[in-house]
Image 1 (cartoon, rainbow, N blue to C red):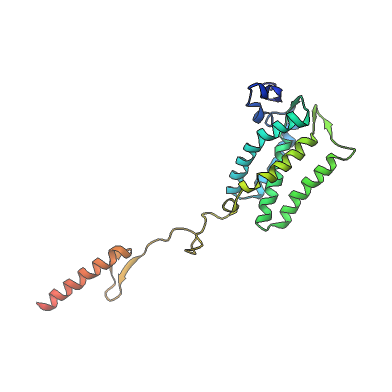
Image 2: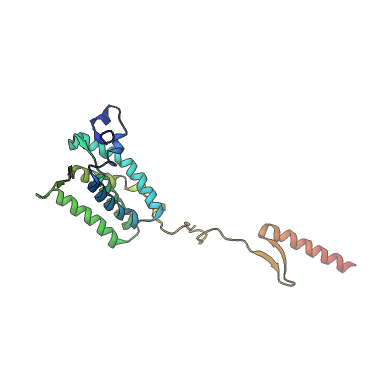
Length: 211
């Protein structure tokens, strides 16, 4: 996994490390913990918001890697904790826009508590051969705030398909056949061909009357 971990080799041309450094882990326990932590923000938001969130994290990953290399002072880094913090922050903001305040406060409050604990004497925590980086968590949270506009209003709608406010409909309207109520005969489908067929029937009636 050394080929994919985040090191200063990323600045020497191995650019893939700016992304893959967040995907590789030190051991299975590290991977399992991050996987479980990544589930809530994606479960709580709608499908369109999930896609926008993934795109946002794709853009945040290299920037966060650069922050850690230049500011954090890490020689090597593995793990997705910084991106997970970003995902929690972004999802919390999405839920706030949807006025789901309880869920939003849970996510944002948990991240705020995490950042405070990172500065507490018991943090940063260490174990299992990896270090939880305060810089990664803070950087992920700040970048999530900067990229928050990427998840716009259209991505926040949970119901599909999206409705058109001007039409007041939740989808395309089906056309019903036009019926001549005098004899129940179907004279056309849709507005465009109904009128010509009505004229045809009227002309036929006139001809029969003249005879």
